[in-house]
Image 1 (spheres, rainbow, N blue to C red):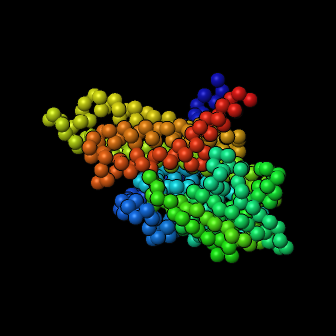
Image 2: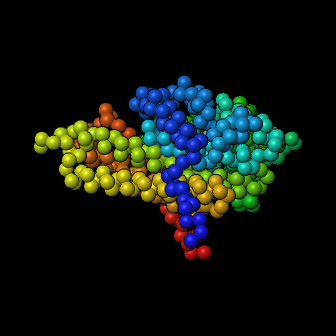
Image 3: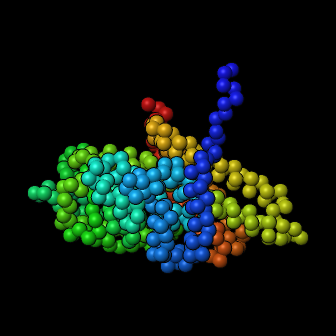
Length: 387
């Protein structure tokens, strides 16, 4: 019974730095993002002023070391910030999520000193990044990609197209996956750093989406796009490792986005049910409504604990593949269910754009699709259970 007085902190207990960032992100979301949410959703475009404010707030380079002009923070700090931004707007949440958990982490984990010195200060202070893996014929089967990279002298020539690229309209730095040897399967895949102004690179069709409408999702085209050899991220033929390890971290980020969406919907439902009167009293006084709210809150807390736990495990340097898959899977399920119940609680008002829950409902759906569908997460979990 030694150290009986030594208490372990709860998963939801934050350090002082984590709490400060959580509060700052929440305040920024409420004051700067919330007034623009409806207009951005209708116009299907992030406000350019908001993009710059994300950098000014230090929210685009949370884990980038201070020596590269970043925040010098932790992965968990990124997660709590993504949750708070997504609580107000999922489009803004995924904007900073992709930057922090996919793009920045790929550079931090696989970039050499030259690449880090060239790109991390830009990503921390002024330039948006995008992650380009998916293609028309390679979604869940990510490594069936067709985009090719041919070596020519001191550069590679890339040809092909990428679909569903988040942040494509705002981005200047693109992490593009292409194969140097189609016959080698996944062993030919290589990660390339492509800048927007590179010859042969262009951003094409923007998708008109159900939810996260202000987040740009576009096709990108590579037509004899010249990429210097020094812009290979990691090793030639090892791009699959860059992709898989980065996506595993990204899934925790999507989990954070989904608990933010669910919490935002619950917050709106709590406020509305206490104001809306039927049969002479607030509808929150009815036990049936109270039970719905209680179940919603409980489901969100289970998802939050899974997400926070996965983030802590990752941060401690331990294996987290199963936990990341569970976090993303469950948080996405919870977000879809909670936002649907929030619409129900609003009744007819829940179905109109004047009230916030119809947008939360639309925004939640993508959680079960991108960065690995729910079925792919279940597949991953089952494999790890049965190995």
